[in-house]
Length: 184
Image (tube, rainbow, N blue to C red):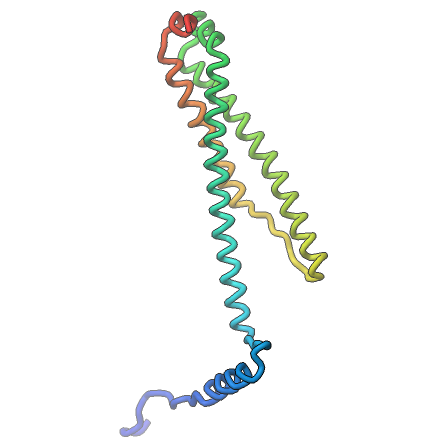
């Protein structure tokens, strides 16, 4: 390298890009009913639509889980109230608070797990049918991928919510004495 030469690479000309933009805008004025879009623009647009769809489905999932948690709390509260006499008798016979807690927690666990698995099977089947229908109607190849991580996360959240939902109504009932529970 000579003394006067710089270490910078030579400047690239931006003329082809400017010519493309000028040509694009000229044809856009002449033919407003047509549009031209590069592959990169189409890819960026498809990526943006994909992420917007993902965010909307995540929000729908959160709303569905919140509704399910409240329904589960109401269901478990109803189950506790219906079994009030049974709980009083079991407590009078000597079953401790921990045993009664385990009874209600196990019931909530079984209900939540079975409902989550059944919901997952139905949801996966419907999603597969929607993808299959789209591929047939649009005549394009599309692959269905199972969202295992989303399903597992939703199932774990539901199980934790079920355990919490059984704990809340059971806690207040089990603080009473057996005589207090049986009196009503």
